[in-house]
Amino acid sequence: MCGRFTLFEPSAVLSKEFGVPVSIDFAPRYNIAPSQMAPVVRASPADEGREFTRLRWGLIPSWAKDPSIGNRLINARAETAVEKPAFRSALRHRRCLVPASGFYEWQKLDRKKQPFYIRMRDGLPFAFAGLWEHWEDPGGSTIETYTILTTAANTILSPIHDRMPVIVAPGEYNRWLDPSLQGPDSLAPLLVPFPPEEMLAFPVGPRVNTPSFDDARCIDPLP
Image 1: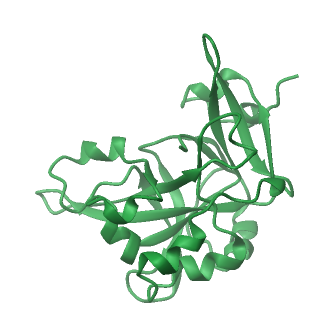
Image 2: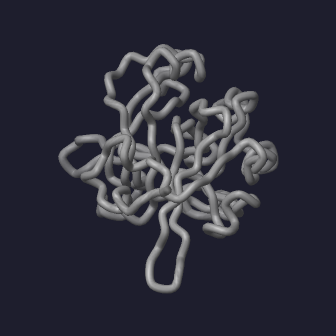
């Protein structure tokens, strides 16, 4: 799964990496947690190309009666998303990229869980495969939310956890965001474990366990 991640590159770097002007302000984040706002890249709902925007992490299906369901839908299994009522429409019509500098995963030990930080070896930002949705409350206010797709762990992640977020290779950004691709067969080749040789994982301290701690010390490697 994916329960925390980071995003701390300057907007100019993100704009170059994703080919989209960054028109929103956001501070460097080292401990993005579910229910918090974070930037995503998506096809503009107004058919004006692509946009950077901020959505809330934890997908609320359009048909939900209670928005608290989003707290349970921070991840979607790539293998079954097309079958699940909460995700199948978004998988066809509302895909997004979730920019990240790295993410955390916890390894179960005898009496505790050891957090690990995972990033790219080249230090560049990357993108999770995401799905987004809009939900209206009875008063007419709209909440836009997203979830992160997961797949089986690669050999970097498997000693830590059996799942990992789906990471979209930069050369596949256009394909993932292409609204004309709606069939599961056209998207399945993207929903696979990322090449492990391009990733790096190392243990970090327990600071990340507390969402209110959101600074660079969260990603300090253990001695």
